[in-house]
Image (cartoon, rainbow, N blue to C red; front, side, top):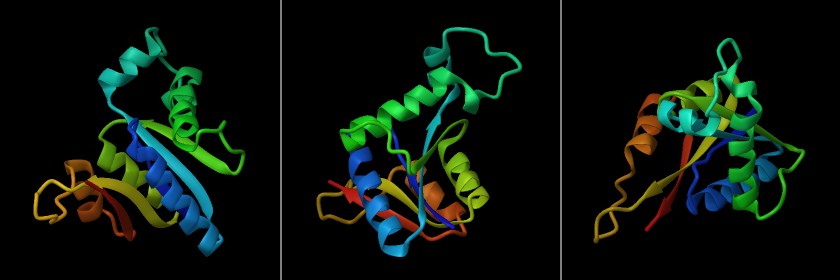
Length: 142
């Protein structure tokens, strides 16, 4: 089993990854981070033809994920962290990756949107919560 941290390229990634690291250590599970690019982001990253190549194995695509993890942890990519960068619909790819890894939990960030503090998560977070059979830990941000 594994703990899967769904990270994006924002300041929230550090909190999500930190929470996932704590959970993985407490439960003695492997830690995986997954970042999902949409197709327009992929075009910007690659700027070249990769026909016939598995996009998740592409050097430039992998560097995007490594850079996000490095910024989130303020240190180079840790050898005990498995990283996957996928392309497509973020919620669907996160859930599919977690299922493939037989994840114990998915850790994902969400935003509070109402002034009363009622948590209304972003659409990716909501879709992961609703679509996943795996328990989801949502790290809320104001």
